[in-house]
Length: 112
Image (cartoon, rainbow, N blue to C red; front, side, top):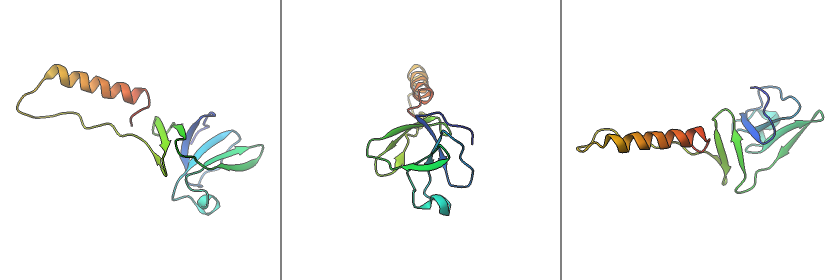
């Protein structure tokens, strides 16, 4: 995993070495050194590890998933809905609009 700028996070299971100014969401399957900090944001600063416990409504941008993650008891993201297929009446323009809308939401980081 590469460096993550402030305000951005990737997921971390305790298996890779953190470098100064990196921020990670600690996964539920974290290794022993991180295990008691599951769901926290791990930060290495000044050579020391710090763990920021999440608060309800906290939001970060996950660079691995390329979307925002919202904390509401667990870190969640929003999956894109399935695009329409089949049906007895096919509206090509509506489907194109829906596909463009979903892609725009992905590009903005609101959907995975």
